[in-house]
Amino acid sequence: MSEGAVSNVSVSGATVLVIDGNDHMRALVRATLQALGVATIAEARDGNAALRRLAAVRPDLVICDAGTEGAGKVLEQAPGMPPVVLLTGPSGAPDLADRAAAVLEKPVSAKKLYAIMAGILGDGTVSPD
Amino acid sequence: MSDTDKPEIITPPNALKAKVKVGGAGAVDMAVLEQAEQVIASMADDYLDWVAQDLKNLRAAYETLRADPNNAENLERIFQISHDIKGQGGSFGFRLITQAGNSLCRFIESLANQETLTSAHLDAVGVHVDTMTLIIAEDLRDDGGAKGGALMSGLNKMVEKLSG
Image (cartoon, rainbow over all chains, first blue to last red; front, top):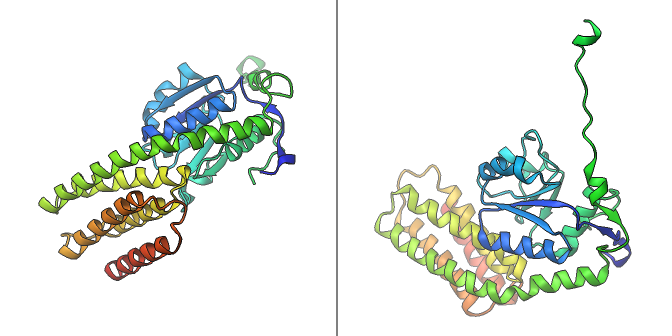
């Protein structure tokens, strides 16, 4: 993302649910979100756990690893499901990507993640590129 | 249909507009983004500990597979660990181990219709484990340069031969 593309959107008020079966990647995404100012972050290890927590957490945005068990269920747009950012590997996830609000290809970077969040949660004018 | 039968359309309040704002306190600028990138970079040291444990688990799972090659759960365990390694590496500057992990995942997927694993299949899994161990032992970051290219070329040729 170029310097001029920063949208100056504050995302600190948003609640984000991170779904990833890998403890380290969840820690990475959480730390990145915290550094971006997001104060309320919930976590789930798989799609089923995420769906169970949905009503209690009431997230504004979900970040879901494509390889995590139950990712497909998360993308089925259950009642109360907010926009989902799909976290993929280098080969993508063509079977899931169409149902996601955005796709974030690893490696995770703060700039790419913020650009996607600002685009979805803000005015929709920010590109992750 | 009477008026009382008509479905009531409820438009939920857009609470997000109240939570996300442009400018002001908490606004993200380039300095905040750079700090956030530094947070990711600072986790790289932790990553080396994480991947060391993952490689230890991968090696143990491989030894279990060799002892009991036709137990599908053993191969699935290797797939899960290599999938984790694949997912993490690039985010911490180790793109080469992500490529090697991806190669192992794709190779295991190609074995789905194999009723029994041959010694060549098992050896190929072992070569992947050795390669990923070498990548971390020799601190081959990013694409690993010429050595990384040679390693991936070797894996690709081996997988192509066995999967074809």
